[in-house]
Image (cartoon, rainbow, N blue to C red; front, side, top):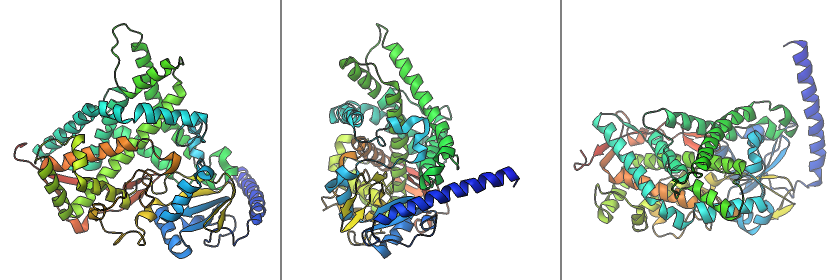
Length: 505
């Protein structure tokens, strides 16, 4: 290391140390007996070493020692972790007004995403307007009903492609197939086009781009733990994320500009997709479409919906193949209600309780966003007799809640039956199961996600006589390791072999 590098490193250490002393004194106004319990922090780095490579598991283990609400010092950031449904309800509903805003990861500042992104901006007039647009114009029941045909078409294309793979003697990468279908479902819903052209590498490239975004956002970042480092982006996470964002925003910009130009033509026929809905909404208010706001809204919709939906479907299929008796049970339900080999329609879902139970059980065991999105305490808030100090980051460990033995019998086993006589759902009112969050910041895309998941899973199961694991893999040896990012993906792709229904062969 040359002299200049040594001097830079020395100055950075001194700079950080001064801030460490300041934060140490600033934190003393909170009595240790009033903060939630937690492991003793080390000097300077606090409890960073406690996180490990799988923080959702590490923090679950810590909660078993310190209780359902615990505090950590992650660098200079006070973090409170909630690992029980009772405390989650306090944060997400009872005291929601004090926890409704976010701590913003430094990476989200890339391309000014934090200024426009609905999941990250503070609760404000701008946030309420975006939320209203989503609830009333994008994910309303009448809008989703109007787009049923598009979703049905894309799912049938998925089944046709799986058939072709079988006829060629090829196994199916479930995650990739689901991702491509979800991408086209979203792009059809938003732009009335398929982004994943079967004759191109678009789907694979887009999947790598989306996972790159989720992975970068989910990486531990020194700039988040030591805010003084934000200006220099020491790990390069913000720079890499900006590159990913720019590629996606560039795509959306071209799509939006092309649509605005097309609408000037007298021959243009209005579609019922989300983009036309947004443009019509702005015209009704005599406003121009806010390009930046719209691009970042689509960035959120595509990056979140494609990764989380395809990931959940892959986990669901993996659990069914690891538990063949559960697969047989849902096959029997589909055969009885719809008929073997017949297309599954969205109207069938309400009469398929076991299929719905499989989705819920998958969310319980494999919440796609294990910590949801971080909350921030706006003031000092008392929770369960402890003080959550102003500015503290609050994480809801949905993964731990889903495996809490105080709530669930045999919590580590895949048992969809537990939901058949249960009123627990994923709509945000039952804090035992919160894959979409809760309170005013519950995910607005929940209605579309549930339709897509039930339709795709039901169709994959009912269109074939059976599903088997690839040669050499048996249910007992199926790899169920997780890959941690802001979303929880399957570490090894699920490769499966469908057995063609005789009417389709």
